[in-house]
Length: 211
Image (cartoon, rainbow, N blue to C red; front, side, top):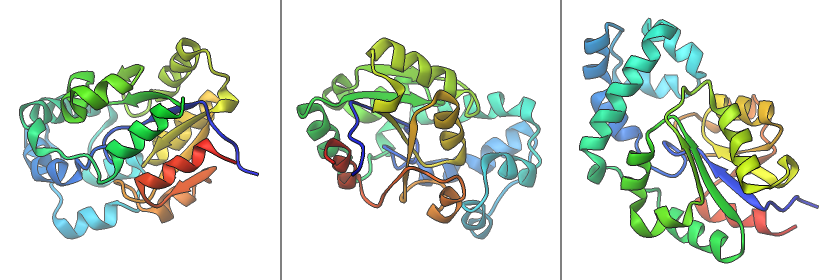
């Protein structure tokens, strides 16, 4: 029997928003700006099988540059939010979860402004809790904060994401991790971190409402 969840916490980029094409379109510009190595399309495809720390090593980005590069990406995305679509089916899935009493939250290293811009007013209003703007390695504390605000036990919450760092954050916060197959990291890479759930399409997320 599968667990049902009262709180669904989502990563944003690569989970709700199909922002990878935009990310790749500006990656080399950001690399030049901050002094790490460019990547081509073939390298980008290979890097989907790496974890974030491995990717940083591959492109020669020291940890101290990550906040600077992240800010550059967030600002470019703010200026181009109309170019970032949600994955097909995400809107309907969020509406259905909300109708069935599942609380919704977003914990993302992107900015709350960008998340709201891409979600739009209607879907954005369905999200009860936004914790945004932290390092990709600092999500666990924000997940715990959402649990406290939502007054939901960790056992009844699921963090849904597309990166191994999302799985690490979920584990540290004591919540289950649901891996999506459509995001930045390959599902093979995500299986190495043993997700409790896998979702092949956004509509599959509706299964968290039933045993």
